[in-house]
Image 1: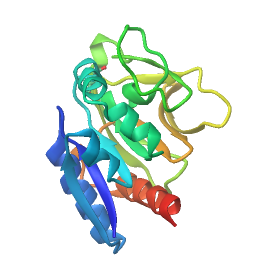
Image 2: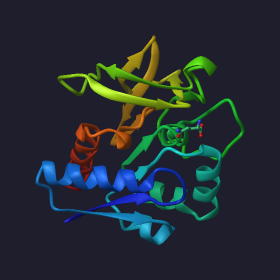
Image 3: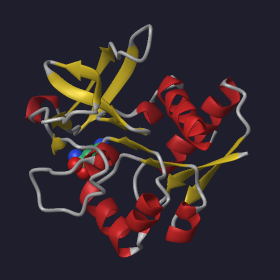
Length: 194
Ligand code: GLN
């Protein structure tokens, strides 16, 4: 039985829990999907999901609660969406606490004022058919380093990156009915525990 923790500090946590549970059922996995708040709870998990929200707030709480150490010491795969992508990066245009688990830089709110929120069908290289991308004050990645896999781009901007067992998306898979991003992450987690 694997354990997936949805980091419950701020943001659209319940939506991720529902989608992760749906994905678990879809691929008939034996997994618990729980909300987690503390470093000891995080340390017990096989995979962690970091939701959208405000990356400065979530990052500060991660750091203050020692959750960054729990994730790193236990080599826990992370799915980070939107603010979660920001937190997975190594550098942003602000001074803020980051996990730095994916060797890339991120531009926060990277799609400019006129496009602060939008939807677009995305061609992601891990999926056979387009994925409905929901972007809300989304970041984009740049300066991705060797070893990262660019999973998707839009208007020449990188919006999905895989590295080791981590996955960062600029968009919000938890705000769709499409479980394929969560399924992809669950399979990564499974590869790690096997
Ligand atoms: N712009 C936010 C940040 O950088 C992320 C927005 C979101 O998660 N929807 O923290």
